[in-house]
Image 1 (cartoon, helix red, strand yellow):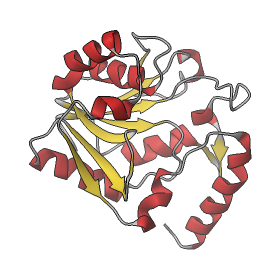
Image 2: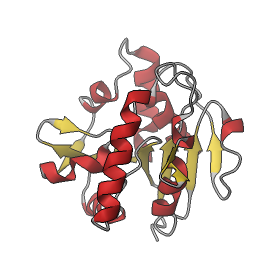
Image 3: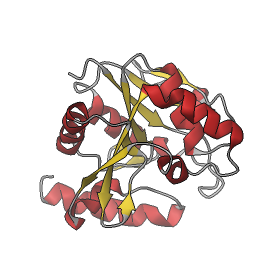
Image 4: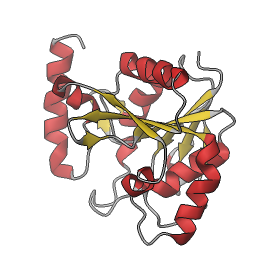
Amino acid sequence: MQKKMTAAILAGGPGSRMKGVVKPNLIIGDKTILSKTLDVLKGIFNEIIIVTNTPEHFIRYKGCLITSDHYKGKGPVGGIHASLKAATGDAVFIFAGDMPFLSRELILKQSALFSELDCEILSPRIGSSIEPLHSVYRRSVLRLLEEYLESSESYAVRDFFLERDVRYMDLGDEMREIFTNINFPSDIPQIERILKKRESQNI
């Protein structure tokens, strides 16, 4: 159990690209994506936060703190800020709410590595591709993130990374599937194919 690290899931709300569907509540296999995420996170973290601007869609998920963005319309960086603001842990492990294939083993390894390092942010990296929404953020960056939100013309998480002490956990290409997410309805059949493959391999 991570006593000083909070988990936060950026659940968002109905997306225009998803025709109003709330992605974390999509059923993949026999469970919603958010249920799958909580199954992985419970037992690792003693505090789990769901960040959403439509909390009415998530009241079914018990044992989680639900909070909303303080900076509206800023995308994921606004959700990261809300997570850091609400958390009681020294650091927050931020997850996108539409990743159905999270790995408990990788989360434990990344959490342990962050505890060993003296850095502000730890993010996975595969080649040149980074995963800001599978990253650990020290809560001490909260004030700096507020300054960024209030002064920057860009709200990209990657641009905020350029100003901070970020370390990277380099992974092989075989790990890429863990970070699969859903952007459009047309992505769902591919997600279901991956699920069937993983189930047949007992992953």
